Image 1: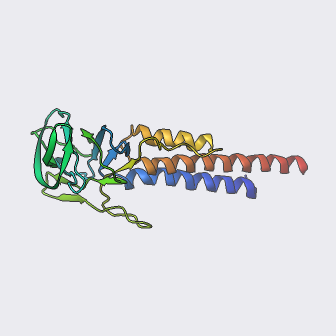
Image 2: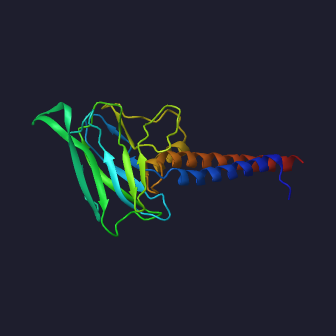
Image 3: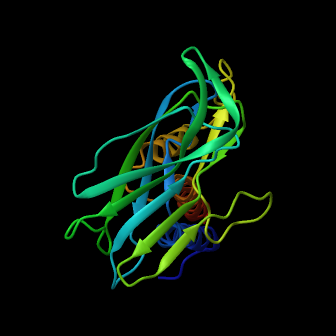
Length: 240
């Protein structure tokens, strides 16, 4: 059967959308922080999600740098079964004033090391929880990360965000907003866009939230294009 132009266009759109949906899963396997937003001056629990990118090696160690130019006074770690956590502290150039006195040192690095048999194996991921606060008065915190594999390879997730450029090895970034200025959805936002945001926030599949969001929106648009093509085809048949 020969497809009419509207129907053929809908099929093409759907095929392209399916390809876009499959691509982000392979391209987004980097260390991320979830959730990726918090409030300045508050406390929050964040999770570093670490997928294993290699087919023949396991992840044995994760190192996270905590910036000290805008220090965080309280850093607490949740135990991870099979992993040993260690912290390093650094002297602060400017002490942090608190109700309990001045803080002159702060945690500047966290290292998780896997016990034998607990490594992150190929096609698996692990999560590491950290409680932080009070969060500094700044727009974002960049957590540079090092991921060590059993074959000795070290992947440096240290590229900071740059306008108009996609980093090859992006560092996990926690965006900070001022208290009382929580983001609200734009008026008239589509239900598809809101559903896509919910998928991104859940992070259940371990992939990068932004990539999944774009893929879901693309799938919705592709299905809409296919339906429009089918309706046009039926109208053309009735006219004939």
